[in-house]
Structure formats: C-alpha cells, structure tokens
Length: 301
Image (spheres, one colour):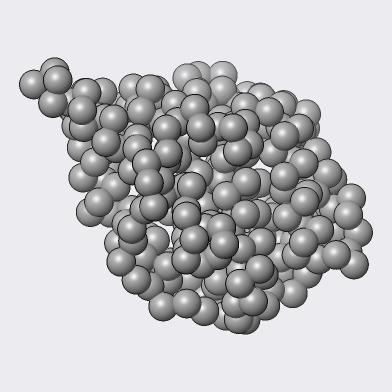
C-alpha cells in the first residue's frame, strides 16, 4: 500500500473534457467501463457479475424493491451512485496495474462493488412514507444504507459475514466518522472501505455539474435539518446556498484533501493513469471545479 504524499495535479481539466471519459448520466456507459475494470481485476471470474449487481441496485433506486418508493433525493440520486461506482472501479483497476499490495481477492472485491452501489440506499423511502424527499434522512442515511443492504443481501443469499463486510465499507462514507470505530475483518476489507470513501468524495466533486448542483445539495441539507429539528440532529451548517458555495473550496482543502490523503491512505493516486504517478483526471477536474467556483465568488464579491 502506498504512503500518502502531497497532491499535485498535472493540469486543469475542464468539466466538458472530464465527461468525455465516461458520461455518468448514462448507466450503460458506466456499466460498460466498470465491467471492463472488473475483467481486468478478475479475468477468470463470471463476467456477468457486474451486470447483475447493477441491475439489483438500479431496481432499488427505480422503486422495484418491495415496500420502497423510487429515489426522490435530487442530489443523492442514481447518477451520484454511478459517479462513485465508476471511480471505485477505476481506482481498483489502477491498483492492479500498479501491482500494489495487498491484492484484493475476488469474493471480497465483489462485496466492494455491492457496497458502493448500495452506499446511498439510505435515502430511499418506504411506500408508507410520502412526506418530503429522502433528503430528510441525510443525517441517518449511512446507518439506513447499512440496514437496507443487510435486508437486500440477506434475501440474495449472502452470509452474515459478507453483509458485515459490506456494512463496514459503507460506513467509510460517513462524513466526520472516526474510521477507528469500524471493526474491519481484514486489511483488504479496510482497503476497500477506504477506496469506497475516496470514490464517493471524488466521484461527485469531479463531476462537470458539481458546482451547478451545490444549491440542490443545500436544499437536501435544509430538508434534513428541518426534519431532524428537536430530534438530536446537527444544526444546519450553512445559512444559504450561497454560503455553501462560498465554503466549498474550504471543504475541499481542509476536509476532503486531508481525508483522502491521510485517513484513506492516499488511495486516490490509483485513479491516475499510469497509476500511481501519472496524470490524475479526477484531481484535475476537481481543481478546475474549485478554481471556477472561486472565480465566480470573486466576480460576485
């Protein structure tokens, strides 16, 4: 496993250019690229695994899981899951290309793909819960995702040990969560959890429309704060959508970068091609997004 190092970017990558890599608005395009990565990871495995995993997860977001409504959170939607899943696959593929240790065995790697595909199912509402959107569960969505994954995967015949691994990985997406509180069953499981946490953050922040969607993200935070008022939830951290926008560069530099560099052990480096020291399109796209946002903020000041 590589030690963290200071992040640099090779050049700025404009949002439109980043989308040309894989358009995350297209489930077909993302699934095709993830399938390619999976084949590079496990060439002797059943190559239908990814299509089955995508189909299972999409059916949940599309309202085909008994007792649940389709996803109605506007930021944490199906495309958000596709963004994280794509980054996760590219990262794991980069580790293999770089011959990084330890290798991730196939069975555990497949649980990792299930974990990233299900990591935001906590935003799904039950059919008897018509009020508001799933965004009201922002504060509790990680635990809800773990519960949803448990029920779903139990129905699919996965063992309690497998389900626990998936839940441990999902917990790595909790903002501010102490990773030391997670009882990983192995170093490989911890690595997958850190890869998932890295991919969840970078997949969304590198998106071409990340800056445009910040007001939608604020609306989710606002709905969650109102829903949890008096229930022990955290207060709303932003006074307005503009306040969220103004604090996003600080969020990137003071939270995300240390998180992926130190806490997640620099695994983002395997998103580079060639990995781990080549140009990194994810970091380039994020830096371009942040620079664009700062230009907007300066112009409005």
